[in-house]
Image (cartoon, rainbow, N blue to C red; front, side, top):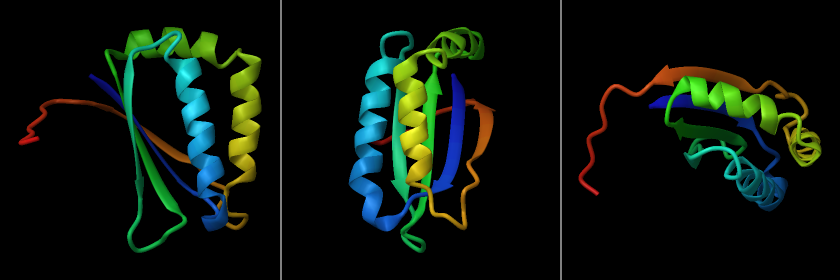
Length: 106
């Protein structure tokens, strides 16, 4: 599995907008990719969010993302997303990982 992790800060009074944007973006992504995404909100800093997405493999991700990123809807959603970021913490950090093992008791 190929994994993307994003970290950013969302204004506390914009969380519902943020979750709505993520839901709309997921519908677009699902037209092209199979994925699983989870969103985590920090207990210590309510503006801090981590987004973890899992994909079948990196090649499929890269191939599909070039098409997804050309979609006008995605570009508009990203502009809306950026407007929700905390003004003094505009950075969106991202990382790429390969899943080596999953252990679950769920």
